[in-house]
Length: 486
Image (cartoon, helix red, strand yellow):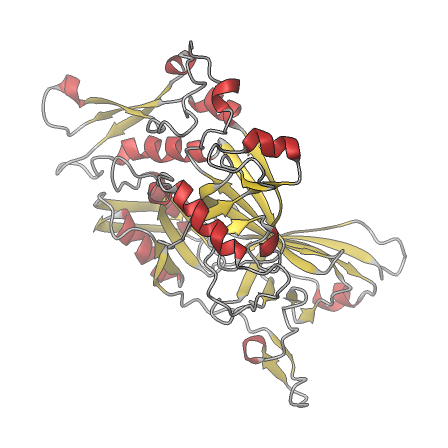
């Protein structure tokens, strides 16, 4: 189950961050040195290095910490306890002040996390002492991108969504990462006194590459606008059995007792709960499945009709009324149906329609031909990935994981005799004590991560949210959910 990441950076960020400096303990000088130039391994390694108005948090002052990448911008949440009033008197954030964060990477080839955040809210209860010495402050912050929320009135003439977003990235000092080379949606994109944050969202909603594509965008922790065709990341697991064999053989030669060196690049990225992976940042120490399929079907149906009127379309007036059905492709025989239970026709009746107004395309208009259609196509297809999620907790931080990438996962069943019997495949020997769970194993799209620092054991962990459109049939699927006549 090898992995080749298809999301590549084609433009590097130029945004300048605030300097984070510490006392130079290595040379004995009294001056400060930039955090990126300090070679002391403990800085940002044992716990997050956080600076607010030149106040550096100690490990004892940090109560909780997490960086989430699920929304358009990364979100920082942390709590700090103050046992003296110095922070309130001298360092409490004022309008425009920021929080700077540094987390060191354990591998030299992977960049560390270095981010500046705008402070949205600071919450606290009154101190329990009259002098205000002891207090706990709760911070909610978002990644700082100067100019992102300023309003602009501009036109980007005869550009595709791909080229327009790349231009916006340059203006904002951001990088640009994608798994595409172009889109088929050339037009004049107009920003009518909108913030670039809203404009990027509007462009993405109407972006079009092909009828099979559906597109999303977000800004990652390395200051890149990511413009991703999620359809390219799905791909059927046609070689799943061969992949399982290759990966399990590779795991057999990994020693669970031997410490894996951080710079060792001989191990391809695959997430799993095999005991031999415990010393790696790929080890899943806990996982669960979550579903919101019922709610999504209730609101969106199994298909949606995109209805609009194209003012400048050639031909009779009646032909200018457009109605296009958007629905996921039919799952293969090896997969669970993504259109209701097997043998039940109820799903054929559940559909929705959306009137999305008028469109002015072709030479006389300003919209690309699929401007309205892509609005529904991008929405409806992305909702398919939200029906069922696999949420995994990694025992370490893995900075190789990038949101939007295609990730292989191997979940093993072991220890529970009944579960082994219920999930064992025909090709597996009866006496096997550990088997691959074929329903939860396979390729996923990484929908987001949450980096958490635990104060209980002093370790970094990572929560990864994984989704896919097609799920393989469990071993006993036909005996439990197939309603067709036998």
